[in-house]
Amino acid sequence: MSLASQPFPEVKIERCTGCGRCVAACPERLFTLEVTGYRKHAALPAPERCTQCGKCLVECPFNALS
Ligand code: SF4
Ligand code: SF4
Image (cartoon, rainbow, N blue to C red; front, side):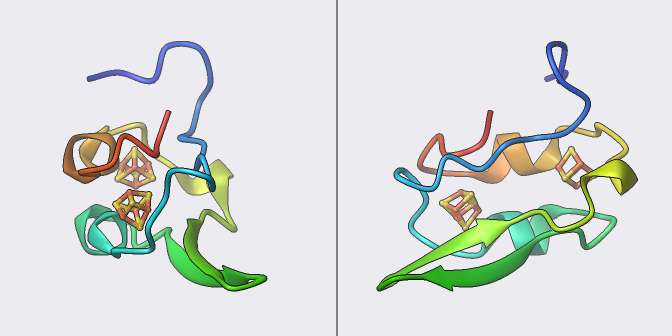
């Protein structure tokens, strides 16, 4: 899977459950889990380091990464 339209994945916070699979999947360890209000969700604080490998998109069970 490629990231054609943008150079790094975007977390759709409303779909993210904070399960952490993307954190484990990313070879570059780019994801963190953050809390906004009462919701835990993934975040990508340094998207410029993304290598576009696509592993996080494959691993997310909730289609929360685009
Ligand atoms: S595409 Fe690869 S390098 Fe980029 S955030 Fe996802 S798993 Fe990490
Ligand atoms: S794998 Fe998907 S649902 Fe789980 S924390 Fe990452 S973005 Fe959120």
